Every structure is written in C-alpha cells, then in structure tokens.
Image 1 (cartoon, rainbow, N blue to C red):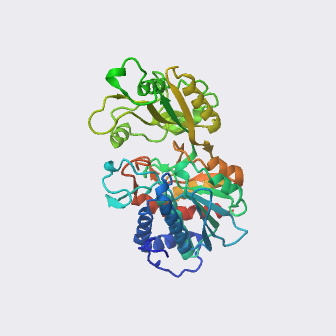
Image 2 (cartoon, one colour):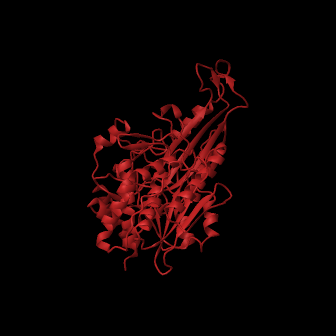
Image 3 (cartoon, rainbow, N blue to C red):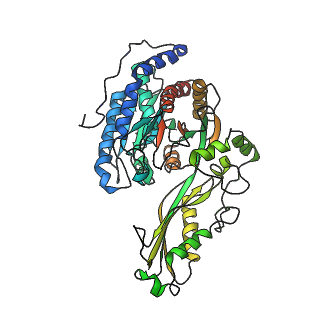
Length: 479
C-alpha cells in the first residue's frame, strides 16, 4: 500500500459464515457491520484527507493518490481485480467482483473528485482535515461523493466476507464529475464490454430526511457558461472618465437583471420551449412530501422563500428549470479603495434543465441572448464551460423497485419518489452507451452543504447506507 494512503486501514474482523438463508441475512450483515463500523468510518475519513480537486491543475498528484487509494480499498473489500485506468484527463478507477456470469450485474458509479473548498475562511475546520462534530463528519467530499460511494465499497465487503453476495458488482469511480465529466463518455464508449451490466446504481443524491426517506426519480441537466464584458482597453480613473464611459460591471448587472421578470420567471426567449410540464398527479405526489418551511429557512439562514411564482419549493428545485448567477467579478476588490472604471466584468451563469431540454440547445440560447442584448458601447464574449443532460428513471423498473424495497426494509417506510435538483452530467451518456437504466439511491441530506464551506455527512446516514445497499443486491437478484 502506498505510504500515506488509507494509513489507518486495519484488517477486517472476519466472521465465519456458511451461506445463510434469506431470512437470516439481516442479522448476519448487522453483526459484521457492527463489529467493523469504527474501521468503516476511519477508512472513509482517510479518503477525505486527500485533496482530490479536479478543477485545479496543482492537485494532479492528489488526484492520482486518491485514485490509487480507491483502487486499494476495492481490492481490500473483495474485488477480484481493480485498476486505475487512464483517460484524457484524470483517471477512472474500475473494479469488479464476479461470482457467477449467470447472475445479474450491478454497476456502481461514483466520483472521487471534489469541489474546490474556497472560501477557506468560512470553514470552521480545515476542509481536508475531517472533523466529527455532533455525529457529523465535516470535510470537503464527505457527502459529495466520497462518503456516499464508499458505502458501496463497505457494502461489498460486508456481503463478500459473510458469503452473502447474490449479484456481480462492478465499480466505475471517476475523477472529473465536478468539472462536467468531459472524458468519461469517451471512456465508456470504448469499454462497453468491460462495463456491461444490468443496472447502474448511484449514490450521489439525498433523502428528504431520515424520518421521510425518498428516492430520486431523476436529476436535472446543466448548461454552464461564462460571460465577459469589455468596455475599454484598460482600467480608467473613475473621476476623469466616470459618466462618459460605460462601466462594464453596470452593463453586465443590467444584462443579468433582464433574465427574470417580477414573478422570477425566466424571460430569455426559447428558455421554456422544450420543457415537459409535470402532470397534476406528479405535482400532487411531490407536494405530498412533508415540508417544514420554518425549519428549511432556519437551516440555511434565510428570511423568506424566493422562486418562480406558482410553484412549491420542491417543484422549483425538481421539476422546473432555473437560471442562476454563480459568480460575478470585475474592477478592484482588494482591501481599501481604488476608484477605477474597470476595463472588464465577468459572470458565471448556470441553467438547470428538465426533460426534454438539452444542454446544447440551452447553451446556444444563453450565449445568443447575452450577445444580442449587449449595448454597442461594450463587447461581449460568452462561452461554454460544460453541460449535461437531464435524466429520468422509471419507477416501475426492477432496479427502482429493488431500491424502494431496500429502503422500506431498513427505514420501515416506503420511500417517496422525488426529482433531484442537482445534476450528474454523465447519466444520459451511461444509459445511451450501455443501454441500461440508472437507479439513484442517495443517503445525503439537502443541508449537507454540498459545494459550500463546512460540507458534512451524518455518520448515521453513512451507516444506514451500508446497511441498506446489501438489500438492494438481494432484491435485484430475486426472480
């Protein structure tokens, strides 16, 4: 094992089991997991210590280190083989445990790369020094997605060590999800036989709550662009030139403000053209989920809810497309004052897409809009960062039913089907290339601070995932 990787890994506490009957599996799994739970947590935290930030070139060595650590963890868990495989960007990690070619195969997808942790000053503890507070692990990547994909690694170990594995399992853990998975599509297309499976299982989403479990029936797509507005060849003295020369920050702010009306409805022509409007039955099902508005507002520190008029919070974050400003800058932002008219202003803007919108068409709509509304006193450059397609999974599929039954078994409640608000860019490509459906079975929570300072993952949720995943394999393998 390379130095510094999974350094606290200890040999599992091995239990000797004959192949148990189905009605005794629960006790067998529970016993094994209880005796190894501290190690399960320590291993996950070791993975969190590696700053695998795919967006920053200075972390290339950390990406390789993390990929090697994932490979090692798969081998330790019981994979027959695991390897780090090159792409045109950061590598993917592939692993497999094949018990019988006649049995169904589950392909587990996850990602070991994480978002940049900035702004660092808002973290209570360093982002890559995982800290346990009130039963939660605070660290970048804890819920997105290291803690969640690692549940599957420990679930495999549980089934392997207790001789209760009923499916073949393959792992595809990539290193570029947080930058749009630009190279994974090509990798999947050239490794179809290697990745051949009957269903894809992903834990990169959230539950409504531990009291009200849910399963995502889909995720939204994404179109992410950057806009650059240039007004002059250099920064200008705001006293000498102010009032006579356009300020690119002002111009950009006006352009952005024009994107929504007073009802928070997007005004960009063509934005809603391809949206599949949810049925009244689906809307009723979504709104059946319990929602505590005060708790929601208090948790994220807001005074009032805000969004498109005519839709509930769950509808706004699931079945409706959105347009958001993700960052804006220009001019002098350092300490003290500097009175200038900046030469340039910049903004990063993203649209979340729903069926049947496509990222290519939406990107064209956005780029054309910002170029078309620019006044003649400035030049506008608008370009794509990355995109991905929305994805829906049928709730009558065998995979979804197996996941629903698994959660019902461990939570004691039938999970509520909901649409996820986030995006997993590779989903539509995985289905297209491999010809199989995806099941989302996440165990995070919406308040886990994904992409924000103080990201966390509840230890209870981590253990609940490890407890639940073996049931999915059992039910999916059943006739």
